[in-house]
Length: 227
Image (cartoon, rainbow, N blue to C red; front, top):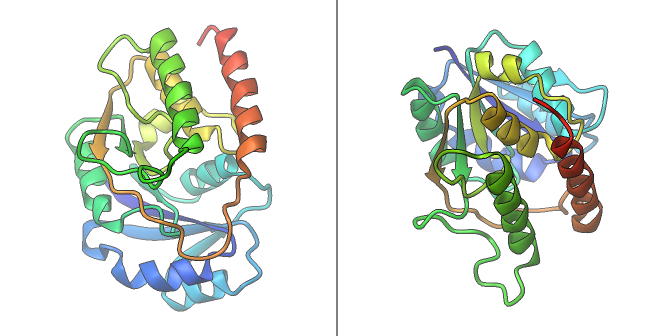
């Protein structure tokens, strides 16, 4: 399968300068970026490195996924956010898992060999919230092996699976939607362990409380969907 690595960017110039030279270029057929109108030089830097940048007219992480798939002829995609949380060394493993027959592969922060950025925090509220949504989704829709990290954005998916699922989320629920609808459509999900790092610079693009409410609304909407 033709491998397309997708960089998701919005004002991530520091992260791009750190990660782009370290990307495993020999493991992919192409690297593209989807940029949501950065103003800090991110787009200009990526283009100077020979990376094709697709413009994202509508804001939202989910829209960025769709822009990437529409804008490439790749058959397998890995989505990578160059902010410091994700380990670029996992990129070849994610693609290899898709090549081995997975429809979707998730870099899990909660497997025994994994590490979550909040593991050493006294009150890891984000981690607990993620695990709560994961438990609910597994209980209701999963009939196979427990998936430990239904929400993490560091993942890969085949074009065939993405087009079959036709995700509609505009924002951060895109990954949760892909996981749930993969179960509903009996697609194969595989997880690999990952070590989550700390953000290199800037602030997260998703305020926890606001994003949490979005997930609640999405979860309730999926309960009443037939597929």
